[in-house]
Image (tube, rainbow over all chains, first blue to last red; front, side):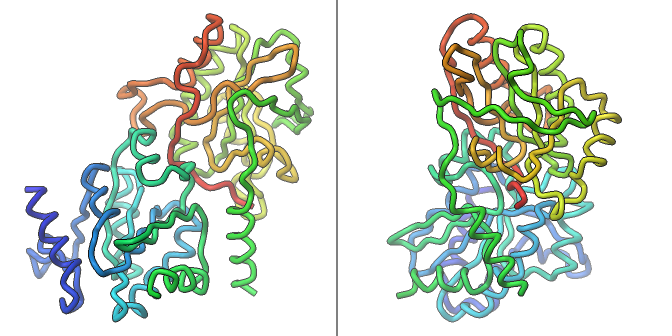
Length: 174
Length: 195
């Protein structure tokens, strides 16, 4: 089950011409349902999203609905994904919300803000095992962001303005 | 204006790389407790060391660990390693962490450890705390309070019953036994300290 989903996602990511990409199969099973089905994963399943080797630039943001600075900067990531769509920039939002808040907070937040970026949910409590794998520089505070392409990777344990985000992404486009 | 503030925020949260490493001497402090009294590490004459925890009311991870922090104090204060909790956030940004809120939280949870306000936010940057909760286990020596452990409380924020490794307990137990701390640094997700 999991490998199939992964292959699909990788395919979508790597297909430049895909219209409004990242429409997940499992989110559109029931046309009448306005509910969102979260993709809840442990770190092993998240790791491939941090290491895609294609011609895109990936902007991966770790956030949570309870994290005020994360919520504040989230529109900038959405804006970035929209404005840089033609530059092959893909935004992936990895939520660290607690499982008991998926229904009560995370899904309503996604719906209310009509988030368009790819959203994954990381539920892996053994944080000491995976934080260093994301980045040796990560102390564990969020928001945290990784920008990468097939040649280089940069980790940021900080908040962004839109302008700052744009500046960083441009470094990967030239 | 908003951009300027956000820019300042980004700047201040990213541009200090200071802070303690294992073996460094940790600074003492004089910070206000929830009972109005000023507290310093040097007040604890009989302590063998300290479990200093940067924590707050408003971070869900900090809240998830409240009972475990209290349990640490219950278990180790009598053995010479009291918990000293410090609230590092700017309360203008997080009013839910102000002194009244800290008092209310401590009362409702029955905290038996000091819960101090890092007023002016001078202490947490010296320690190098970046988030709540963030733990520093110190060993009192003739040279001062030596940092022996930095990191998380344990390896499962979600479920205290599913914990495999109790990092802080293991560190304090090792120090009490006169041994080296086997895993002196761990990491965990936490809430960035609000400046």
